Length: 232
Image 1 (tube, rainbow, N blue to C red):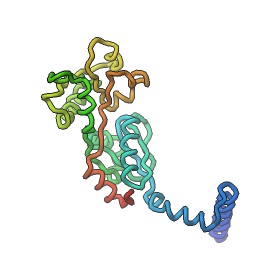
Image 2: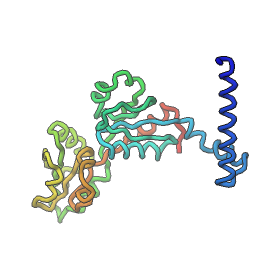
Image 3: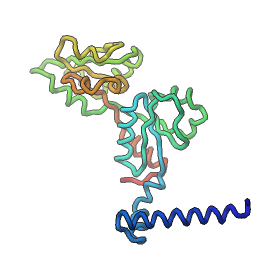
Image 4: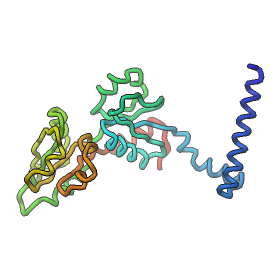
């Protein structure tokens, strides 16, 4: 039986390929040459394989994965730390925010993790300027569940928000969505993981603003270069 195994595998592969060729012709009218040309045109993507992007929430992980795919020919898939299970085998991209989380959960995977720097979206300042009246600064409430994380995000936001135009006030809340029902007219900024917990109605509230993080441009270029991905 062991001697016949290679022949059996070859026969199975041949049957599979024949099925693919028939399927391409019957369903899509493709000739064998057109099928081969189509497969070759997607070779950079298939050779790049799959990378999982680890973040604290599904929405943030998905956003960062889209940023990778917009820059590189790679299949980037989000993986939230809210999940209990470990990501599938293969390379991982994570942010320095969660170095200790990744190291604690999957110490054997550290060699395959590329930690990257992210920063608040510079476009946030423009969005908040809509609340500004005359020359008075906008008072924006930053909402998070944990004081330490709120302090970290506030420090990040000071790099993109001009202090003379936007005044940040930290607010730690167990029920972040309830802040939208309170008094006030200023914007409420929700951290990435808190934003993922809001309902669609809460996200669409006029005062609700997502604190979105993006890859630093130099980091985005370096990640793909180190993994050997093809540029888009």
